[in-house]
Every structure is written in C-alpha cells, then in structure tokens.
Length: 314
Image 1 (cartoon, rainbow, N blue to C red):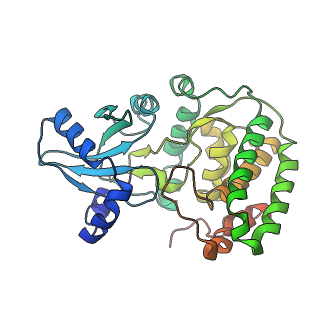
Image 2: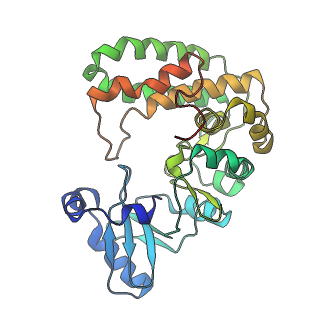
C-alpha cells in the first residue's frame, strides 16, 4: 500500500496514459465505492508499482486504497490480527472479480534504520503471520509439509519463468543455468518439516510505518504455505546486520542452526533471481539491458556475501 502523499500528485498525463491499461475496472470500482460509502464523487490516482490492479480513491470524507483480484479472506484474517490495515469493504464486481477497500493510512516505506529500530515489532509481526491458524487455513494445501519439497516447488517455478526469458539474455544464461543446478543440489539437502503462512514477498515496499511507529505488512497476494526460511532469510539479509540476527530469530521463534541458515541462504538466492523476472498476470516488464545489473544480489548471496548495499541508510 504505497503512500498517498507521494502518489496522489501524479501528473495528469501519466494518469491518462496508464489508466486504461492498468485500471480497467475503474467504472465498476466507482460504482462499488458509491454504493458502499454513499458518496457520489470520487477522484482516482494510480499508485506506483507494477503489480496487480490497484487504485487510490478519494472522496470529500474518505481516502482509501483499492485492490482488485485479491484473496479477500486472507486480508480479512490478517487485518483482525493487526498484521495489515483494516478492511473497510469487500465484495465482487459484475464480472466476478474481487475488490477490497482499505483506509489510506499516512505512512512511508520503512528504511533499514526503521527495521532495525523496530526489530521486536517486525519479528513479532513475522511470527504472528507465520503461525496464525486462521491464515494457514485459508492457504492452498501443498500435499507435503517438508522443507525440501517446498524448496523444490520454488525451484521448479523459477526455472519455468527463467525459461521464458533465457534466450533474451544469452550473456547471463550459462551463469544462471549453472547457479540453478547448484541450488538444486543444496535444496536436496534440506531436512525437516513445518511449513508456515509465508508472505513470500517480504521486501520493504510491502511494509508500512506510520509517524507513530505502527508497522503493517501489506500485499498478501503471494502468501502460501512455505518454509519459514523464505521470509526470514529475506528480512535478515536485506535489512539486519549479523549483530542483530540472533535477537530477531529469538523473537520470531526460530533456531539459528546450520540447517536453518542453509535454507535461508538458498531460498533467498532463489528469491533474488525470482524478483528479476516478471510475475505472471502483472504489469512488470522484462528489460534485457538491465538484467545483468539486477543479478547483483543473486551473485552476492551465492558467494556467501552480505547485502552489497550494506545495512545503513543513505
């Protein structure tokens, strides 16, 4: 849920050129808001990002964030737990597409300093998300509770996506192919069971922090029953220096053992490759010219290095 203050003042030319492609349900959304909130006049803006269809909407009395085509029950369950902002309204448009309305909450994207200063709150949010029976019950069953099987499923999905773009980046193809072979061998070493309600897209763009210090986790579209090492590894590698990781793991409820560290590194490597490739049903482009640069994090974590951007802001 991006910041309204930042996103509302998009240029009108930007709004007009992108509205048809990225907000195709705008007439239906307007009708839904008019009906639900009994207010006729609404102004729309286009949030930053290239994910699913979203809207900023504002009337004389209400500013809100609208998401289209999402899994309503998981948002409602997470909102009850205080993980994500409250749900103001939800339902379905005439074509059967889901619609979810949440309030605009003055906020910003957390910085590394924000994550570190609010470590207990972030670790607790992760723990409550992962271990919520209500959210777990809403996620598709996997057929296996083993970490190895979850890792193989993630690997298979990334290999399929990579195959769609491989020929566009021949200079990187051998490196990525060989890296995936190595990661497959490491996934084969995973041991244990215990899948959780994993967010699976835990980057800072999917967190909000208010001026009062309240933190929310948003954008739940990719949630699935998965290895807790997926979310935990991403948070630790991107935002927390090694000196803070033991404390984070203690609050989140995970053991800092060799097996968990291996799974965090491998799943984070797969995630770093995944985010260089467009998601299905999204507005993400694929830019062959920038692909090599976008592999920076992937290369670093394969080499066992820390985040190349460091852990301080600026």
